[in-house]
Image 1 (cartoon, rainbow, N blue to C red):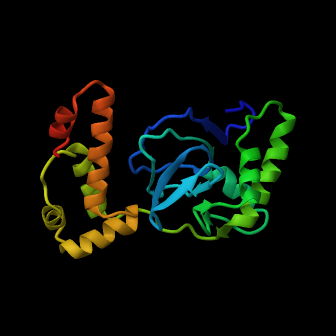
Image 2: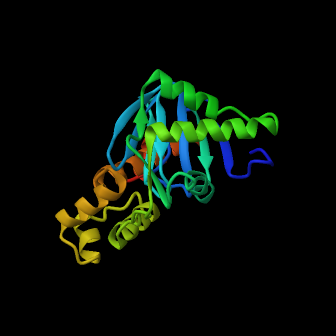
Length: 231
């Protein structure tokens, strides 16, 4: 993070097989895969991403990336504060939200642009150039909206996520999760998939697999990891 550009944060990963559970960010996220590949889970996904793929994520959108096992992957991600970005785009039209037409891009042009955006800022003079290049990129691949879309997940989904994360090894059924929120299983599954991009069953499986990987990395045996994560 450059002290004269507090609206930006650049994260650079080292090659690893680390998996990310479904999560959201407060900022707009613009990233590029530098090495390896992963499965990018989002509401319109999942879809594979490879070295050179560009990933675009709006604030408060559930997403996750799971690398191809057992191979390592690496990426860079630029986080841009939403209020600052809306103000920059507001000079062209009133802007309360920005959406991306696609959340994964595989063009050389887009990769080259994001590669430049995901370079550390070395000098104060770089900040204005970066701002212009960021806005030029968004004009190509994003849309501005005068009204912010409703991105809050239904209460049933929020409750289910809390339950699954607290007890990934439990045998609680999808029917029980739905009934606790007075929903039919089919309606609950539709709401969950619309918010996260995957069904509750797939989400729980990912939680268990990621938990098992962490246990194995900490020295547990395969049998111990499988038992602790409910397999």
